[in-house]
Length: 226
Length: 378
Image (cartoon, rainbow over all chains, first blue to last red; front, side, top):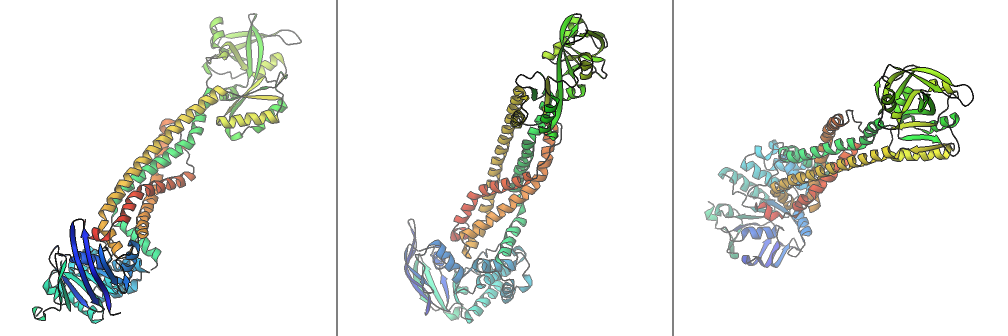
């Protein structure tokens, strides 16, 4: 199957507010897509639907060949656990667990905690020497890299990153984007939700949302990155 | 690392590294456990303590001859004595009632072993001293007032044996007896002295028995004696037994009520503490669910924390509860309380039950957390 994700005529309505209107979108396996838009454009709503944390009020979502738009909460949890790696702007690390334990917790909920594998994941993002540190002892960039290691540990089919560089300075932003480039090079499918054109330009495809509608879907203008 | 180790690690570190958050709940469990163990120890020790207190009100079982028998047979008396539990037998005093004369006026003389009479009747107040020799007697206060007798004076008592001559003997009044009952009109004298006047050694008309036992047990013993020793009619002293049972019952109900109220308050405190913890950790719960944790995993983790909290609280509360029980017992009964080992287990079970019941609502709320909402901080 060529596409990992397909959205057909997806809408999301909260009371009288329509957060998403008739979105139809396909994401190919191995593709790096940026979803852009200003606040209130519906990009977080879209991410929550794709990330199996919300169900659309209308339309169909197919992830890795499985129709997820009408699954119950328990099945959505299982899909999220098995197929999606989540990266958050605010990192969302567990304060009382060390770096390696924060990675292992994702393994724990998935199948079996494996400290050796968790340490390898930390090495991969350059945090091997910080394995025993608590999140508060890590810098913002290190915390985000830890978040990436946690997202990758269960070999997800889709990596979903919500404003992954939103809380980072330039050097840490570059480090995180380098990791995304590595992952993309290895064939990972990445969806990055961002309001930053600089971050979006690293993707091979940009989807622009405005007031819940998809207003642009195309390749970035590479000249902007330079 | 297997799942159990990771689970234990999460529960342990969550509590250890956030201990200030759980301090209130832990304090509440410690207080609850202290009261359960302390009051439990008092509850189970009350019958023993109150039994001792009530023994000062006199015998709670009287053995008298049954049917047409006029006196108790020594053989049957020994048989009945063997049926009484030695560890609970406070005292046993055979009594012999006879009529003696003082200035040609008849009066009731009671022959008794004085040491035994002191054990079975601590309520007997003596102004003077108890008889220390066979020529000394106690005179009831009514007789003493009428005859103007007092400790140290002499009294000549006359006996009329069934066969033989009248015998007169002079005794020294060692003390005046005051009981507030019929004995105020009696003369209490050593059994040997009465036997010397009237013969028939070892004769007993009744036996006072004081047992440190509950009314139910005394009734059962009386029934057993009635069946196995036909010549003896045991009579539980119902007035004392009922008073003892009533006071015991009221005290035990009071202890239960106090314990129940404290446990209820503990439940409220633990529930509030756990609710605060759940609210503070909404994002963490949301994250865990976003990572794929199922509701049962979230419930299991919080229940684990609740169980650890209960065990730690029960352990610490058992230590403070023991001290609490001693303080209560010393101040109320003036004696140390004994601590049955099963109470520690009971305290642990009560702590677990209260903590898990109190955690039920907060943990249910934790399981309902929606990851997308919680991660947005809403």
